[in-house]
Every structure is written in structure tokens, then in C-alpha cells.
Image (cartoon, rainbow, N blue to C red; front, side):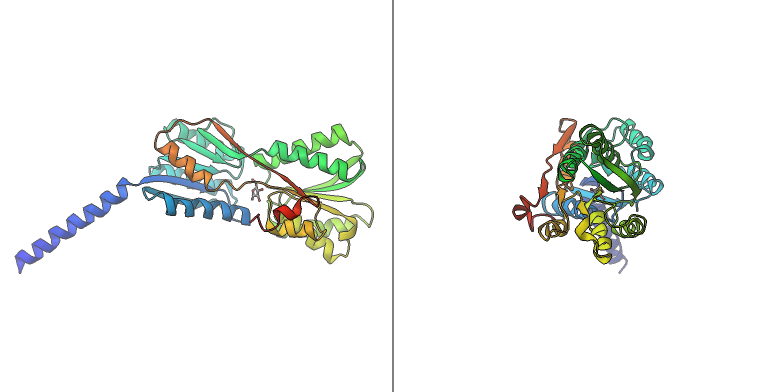
Length: 310
Ligand code: AHR
């Protein structure tokens, strides 16, 4: 009996060691997502997770959610570093707050790939669409659509996120240069989330009477669609044009139905995030930036885009 027990104990140890060795063989890649509040970000995470599960059997992808709080995301990254990730993929909530911990990872020899939003320090690779180009093209579209004159309400994304800063600054620069009589009369941060955008738009409809606002520029489609909801409820959608960013299917449908006038496609960097994170973890040398394409979608070409978003 004793002999059998000893044999069982020994084989359990062997199996356990085999299991541990299997786990150790995997390449750990950390993916720190800033928030999962918008459908765009859920697609970013799911797209990268599904690709890794289907194509990268030697990868253990560890995903964390910063819940739109920079302090939470900083501790997520610290924990990923402590877990020994070979590459850190991060879509940072804000640039400034996440910069020190990203620098800490780089200094420790952990390559960092930023997705969509940037930090203020050198990283191994940044992948995303060009937010300056999007803000600029949106500005040009608005100047043209309003025929050089009108009042705009801007609904901004998360304060301090590089995407927000670029979408805001480039838009304002174009307005100042090309159509100074188009004025942004009010703006507010709504964190790229629909509900606060609805609330803000409801307040704006109290403040500005019919004929006093001509257009809403929202930094993403979730917030643009929130503005549409408030405008429709107030029976004022006919007098205000709405522009968004991202390329949601609901936004394409809204353009087709005449409820929005334009959106700009914004790639959610899946599966590119984990694809390139994997290459880097395996020692491949790559360029420092991959710029993904963006497209203007409006009434003239929306039919080509219907159903092709997310
Ligand atoms: O950082 C960019 C934005 O973040 C996307 O456009 C938005 O939908 C997301 O939450």
C-alpha cells in the first residue's frame, strides 16, 4: 500500500511539474486596456484576445481593465511588469499619468506597444490611426458643410488622452484658418461615453434656442449618437447636423437616415496589437510607428460602409 502511495505522490509531482513547465513555455504578453466603457474598446480587446486564442498557441495574453482611471491603470501595469510579461501592450487612459510607468517598463527592458493613444515617452512601437488628420479633416468638412458660418457644440473625449487633444486641437486650427465665422460656442468632456453626452446635449438644448446651434462635433460615435438621442427627443434634429468619429454601424445607419452627417473610421487596432506585440516579444525589429488608415463616411459614400463597421 505504502509503495502505491509513494508512486502516486511521485507521479503527481511529475504531472504538476509538467503543467508548470507548459505554462512557463508560453510567452506572456500583457495588455493594459484603459477602459471598457465604449463598444469600440470592447472590440479592441475581443479582437486581440480572439486572434491570440486562434493563432498564437504559445502566447498567454493577460488583459487588464483600467476602468477609465489612470491610477487603476498604473497599478495594472505594475502588476503586469511583476508577472514578467515579455511585451506590454497598452492603450493609455491619459498620456501624462501613464508616462512614468511606461518609462519604468522600457527602462526594465520590457518592450512597450501603445495602441490608439500615446504617452509622452519613447516606446518600442505605436499603432493607431492619425488623430491629427481626423481632427483636421473633420474641421474641413464642418467649414464646408456650414458654408463658412455657424455655431458648433463640441463633445470631447477623455481629458488628457492624446486622441482627445489631437481631435480637438487640429479641428480648432482648421476652423481658425479656414472658417473663422464658425464658432465652437460650448464644449464639455463626456469621456467617450453616450450617457454623459445625452445629458450635456439636453442642457445645451435648454441654453440654446432653435436656430442658435448648427452642428455638433463629437469625438466619437457613441457620444454623437447620444447627441442624436437628445436632439430627437427635443424634436430639434432637423436643425442641427451631427458629426462623429469611429465608424460604428449605428453611425452609418444614422447617416443613411439623415440623422448624422459624417463619421471618420477609426481602427480599433485588433488584431494588429497582439500580432505586433508577439513579433516584438520574439525579438523582431520593427519600425517605431504603424499608422492605420482612416476614411470619411458621409451621405455621398455611406452605402459602401453600411454593415462594415462594428
Ligand atoms: O482614444 C480614442 C477613442 O477611445 C475612440 O475613438 C473611442 O471610441 C474610444 O473609447
